[in-house]
Length: 146
Image 1: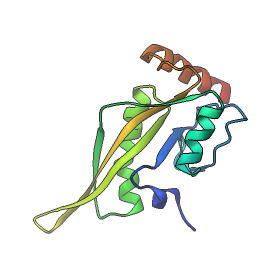
Image 2: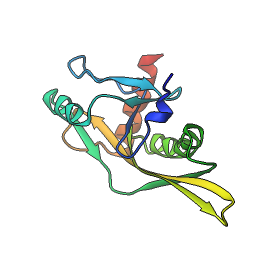
Image 3: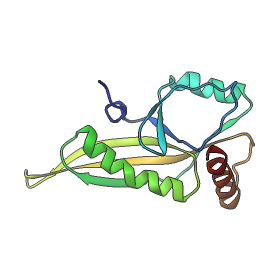
């Protein structure tokens, strides 16, 4: 069985569970955690579907970084990404794109990975909502989901 953690690599996009999209914007996802899903739809098709539905997919400048001890395994990647997902959620963005996942070692003994990512946001408006608007939308979506 393939877990979503093995699908994670540079360019992988995750969306928050609270993101409510129109039915016309059908994207395929797989479960990553309680609050996040990995988009499995082809990247080009994703961009086309978002724009065809009249929605926008924003990319934010500013790299988010995290690290985790261990070799390059799905478990250590998940640990490294967990901190980034908290940061994205605290910034009230509803998506994240993985930049890089790298393996490191110190003194030949201590293994660790580093993960970098960028906050992304999917919304209807052509202008990126401010922090308070994103926070309100996030709260309303969470409330609507129960």
